[in-house]
Amino acid sequence: IFGAPLTGLNLTGVWPGDPKIGEFTSIFLFGTEFTTDNTTEVYFNNMRQFLVAPVTSEMLIVRVLGDASLSGTVTVTTPSGTVNSSEPLIFVP
Image 1 (cartoon, rainbow, N blue to C red):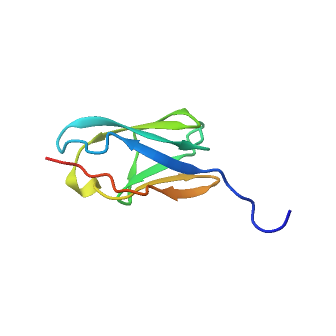
Image 2 (tube, rainbow, N blue to C red; image 1 turned 90 degrees about the vertical axis):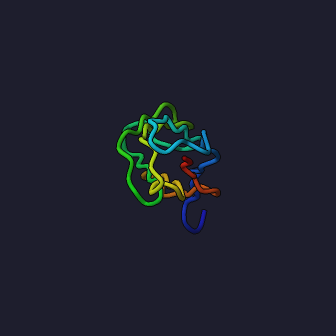
């Protein structure tokens, strides 16, 4: 095998896609190769989120107080690498 190792890290979905500003919401992130040993980091619009609960290697739950400044790309970082959402997460009034 030549070249860099391939990673299966993937972010396939974010739900709900339109959380409310000013409300506490659990955001579910779906994908592959998330870690469950607290080495997975999640960022909303480049702002690290600290209330991250790794459920399985395919699902994370992030508890957040909705704020317009968090609207943007969702980024998941693990020891395997970094992956961004294909669509932005938008917090709505």
